[in-house]
Length: 523
Ligand code: NOJ
Picture 1: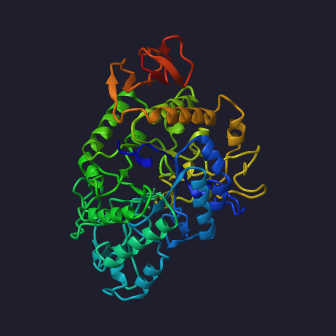
Picture 2 (picture 1 turned 30 degrees about the vertical axis):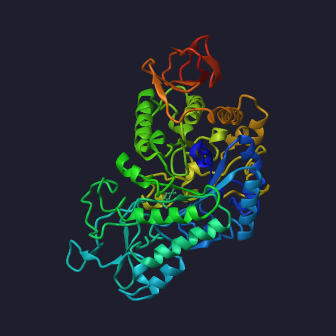
Picture 3 (picture 1 turned 135 degrees about the horizontal axis):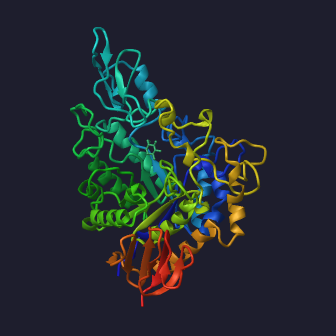
């Protein structure tokens, strides 16, 4: 029998570094802070951590604007801190995945400064995407080279002093690299080795589908920038890059891996990234995008399994991340009884953990944290908020620092007396990790219990699932000896036959209450 590599059915915990734990007291999380809280993660029962970018950065996009790919931003620590973190994570029996951001750098990156200082057509400019503009609508006016929008609002092009325009699919502080330039390719191969040599177990590849743009730079004419066969994402050339990266990963001992952030329109496209000589995993965001509905869940699960089936890769599942509204809030009802979001999130965890493949958790979901929707405008830092003139709230509401202990801000996130980089709500006093640890009915203890049971069961379960007939508001499936039941409706449904192992709210005899999930062992 072949050995299953660790990532195939791992539970990976996303650490949003800036908001996890602040050891040095500057109001922002850091690597030493993570080291000090590894016990929490070990006790929670996760297999691996994924760290969002901690590299030198002006933080125009929370660190996804990297100025130096081989160093740690002083706000987050030092390379020595990083080495100590890797050692500690491994000593705790966990793995470490780091983010890599190859689509764009910061505008403060040495290469971009050189590009700005150099004339049009120079080798320094050719590491980024500089183009001439087009005549504008009115005489004497100039328009950007094409109509591509930035994902954060406004056009994807900014004009520099000498009249050329550079491309940024995200903020203007994030110029896109030109991956047709071999310098870029070599630089990233070297960066991968730099972190592999320091002991990382894997990479999460940011904007993995975006590296190559169609050479025509043709207009979108209002069509979705992610449309199939569009000029921006999933151009065929990108796969050569991942083939090469896979060779590099394979040169190292241990099971080093890469997971791509690939937003795509189709399963065929997704499968290309998972060819045996490319990436090990891609994020499948379907569950995160689905509403609270048994039918919707069933559809997305089927589609996700179908998408990876021909590749032999294991599926990945995620409910929340640093880019989305926290799922406790998404699952809240628009009207009427508030509080249903928590019950649903408890049930959703059982779904996530019952599925084959790996599950990616986002920090704070183990505390049942909701989205913070009432941040004052002047506290918001996400470029989406500013670039849409406040029309879109942006992602700060899911990035509020974690409450660890105590009765008031900074709730043990920072040393007492320090103001965290985003304000923390007063209502979080009862939600700290400390308060929840001593409450057997807390979300934290629910996560610990579910993860522990998954760990006991998973090794023995087959990698596929079989649907079982269920009432319309519910979904039931079997994986070997495990039966899973979820009731998304409000009224109870009859449970399939089996012995209950874990349920998210108490059963009524043989009935599964509304908004509840159960694991049962098959008779
Ligand atoms: C995806 C990251 O998750 C997000 O936070 C970031 O803003 C964009 N990529 C751009 O790097």
